[in-house]
Image (cartoon, rainbow, N blue to C red; front, top):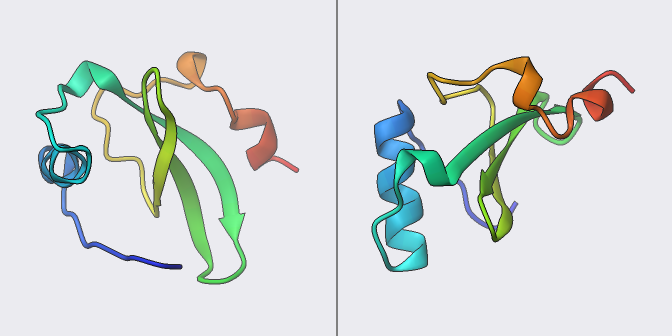
Length: 80
């Protein structure tokens, strides 16, 4: 992994992403989706998706307080 950044909650995740893309990112612009187990670090990995851009990172937990399985794009991959 090229870069690892520790974040404690969704608010911090928004700050990191905003810094990375060079503009303020609003909560509704971020989606999180279960992605599956990463054997490199043994994380139960979640994709962090910037709407209209695509995946921009991964976490080892869902930090989005509004996540629901119905909005998942990748949940089928997590069960492979």
